[in-house]
Image (cartoon, rainbow, N blue to C red; front, side, top):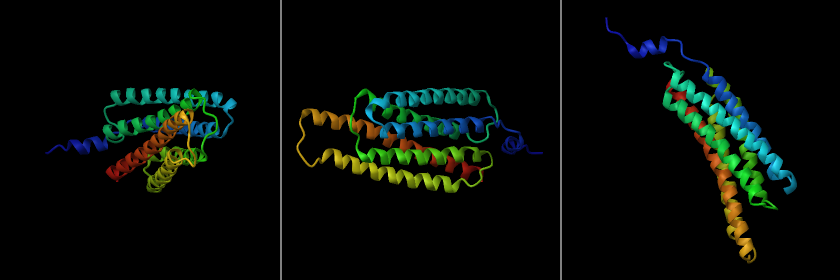
Length: 217
């Protein structure tokens, strides 16, 4: 009698402890996205405290990432491909790293007035974070996930548009700028680059979820 190893793996109960960890990571990101949006909207004097909250969330995210990696190394039968678990974990971590970097630079560079387009970027991140936090628990059943990755990909397009508009605004000012103004432009660009990186990382999360769903269907 021929033994089907792949079938044996499918019939073996797999470790389900990954799902709550993905949910924790996504919910932590959603809280950080809210704090980041509040930071961008806040006056300069209130930004340091909000940046600290984003930093604390980034540290909490690192803890979850570490837990997932330990579990991955100790688990024989995973709920889906190990490569997908690693990619999903890494992209969730990339999201919050980029958000923390943006928050840190706003405070570190002592930026005063922030361009309105930056609020558009953080709004996109908030919506992507809320959608991701809502989707992660559904990985356990693979239910209604297509609407999630379609939505996040659409949000990433919104983020790209906001990013391009901001670059145009920064590098094509309506009047000449002095050396200090040029330095401020470069500082602002670093922040909007980080926000764009966060939006791109959300898209990677969504694309990974799509890949998992297709493989498991």
